[in-house]
Structures are given as structure tokens and as C-alpha cells.
Amino acid sequence: MSESQIIVPASAEIPTLRRRSFLTGLGGLTLSAAAVAMLAGKESLAAGTSGNAEADVNILAGALAAEQEAIAAYQLGAESGLLQKPVLDLAVTFQGHHKEHADVLASTISKLGGKPAKAKSSYDFPVEKLKSQRDVLEFAAGLEKGAVSAYLGAVPLFDNRDLATAAASILGDEAMHWAVLRQALGLAPVPSAFVS
Image 1 (cartoon, rainbow, N blue to C red):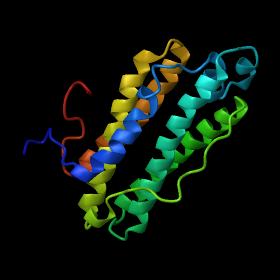
Image 2 (image 1 turned 120 degrees about the vertical axis):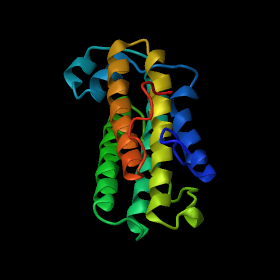
Image 3 (image 1 turned 180 degrees about the vertical axis):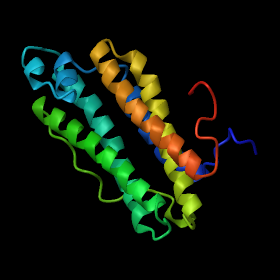
Image 4 (image 1 turned 90 degrees about the vertical axis):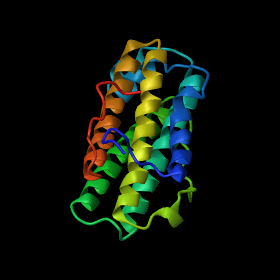
């Protein structure tokens, strides 16, 4: 196996596909300028804009569901007893990033008149296949790679360039998570010059 390949258990691909579909599965709809302004923490800008709030809420809801799944996955890893320091600290840090994303998404959904969904009480993670720290890291890396792919596919779909910028910022965070997890696995953190 070359260093540019990542080992991802087949079971890790299921959550990856769900995360990937959060933006691309909504027919290419985009968020309004109001949503972009709120996501950027600029509520005063949001007040003077209009747009299709229902479509915005649908996209935000998909992104929120993906972030909630990531939070649950990192919780599973942290509670597994399989992660040793400093890897455990890393997992908790990454979970914190996903919590920040989820908080902003939920807040924006509410500001647009929607009702943010709560996280599921359980997820279909491959718990029976997580027997070592490496298994947990491979699972997390698969989820993060899926998130990178989802945001990469979504950025060019946005009509609003501010939204594309916000999505690219989250993409950057997910890419850094993936790179760090690859390095923790002993793989080249950046396997190629281009992300696909």
C-alpha cells in the first residue's frame, strides 16, 4: 500500500455518503444572502436581505444533521477507551469544531424561521469494527474525507460568493482534520496536490 492511500473500513463509507449528500442532495439550492450574513456573524447585514428562507433552511438542516453525526462519531471515539493521549485530546478538539459549526447552523435555521432538528438519539456506526485506536482514527478520517468531498462539491454550486467563501472556510477546517488524522495514522498528511 502506498502512502497516498488511506485505509478506510468499508463500514466507514456509509456515514461518509450521508455527510456528502447534505449539500449535493438538495438540487443545487443555495442559501440567501441573509443566511450567509448570519453564518458569518453579521446579523446586521442579514436584516436588509431577502431570499427563499425555506430553501435556505433545508440546506442548513442537511448541514446541521451532518455536523451532529460528526459530533456523535467523535463522542463514540472518545468514550471507546481506545484512544490514548494525545489522540484523545485531538478527537475532543475536532468534536468541538463540529459543535461550533452545529451551533451556528442551528442558530441560523432559527433566525430564518425554521426549527433546527435535534441530534438523533443513535447513529448506525460500525461499533463492532472499532477494536483499536487505529480503527477509530480510520473511521474518523473517512468521515472527514467525506466532509471535504461534500464541501468541495458544494462550493461551486453557490450563486452567492459570500456563501461560497463561508463553505470554503468549513472545507478548510475539514481538510485540516483529515490531514491531521492521516498523519496520526502514519500516512502522508497531504496525499496529493489536489483534493478530489
